[in-house]
Image (tube, rainbow, N blue to C red; front, side, top):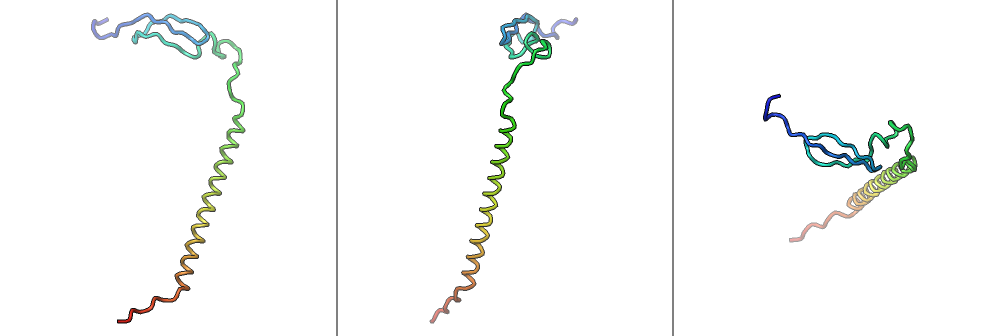
Length: 103
């Protein structure tokens, strides 16, 4: 190996939430903490870990209902603007023309 071009290697400890500690080499020189490791990951252990997946369908339905409500409100607002504009136009059309100034 050429000298001076390779980074320094440090021995570090990787700590998992489950308590497993793995010793390895790294160029950062900092200890790491991880959420999942090979001793607690379902792929390696064969155990299924229940994640918080309950309510996904309900959450989606709530989002779609909120979106539909927002669309209905926007449509009603646009229709109200159109009615107000038509009423204003009709009022202008029905109003008598301004009197000529008498000099």
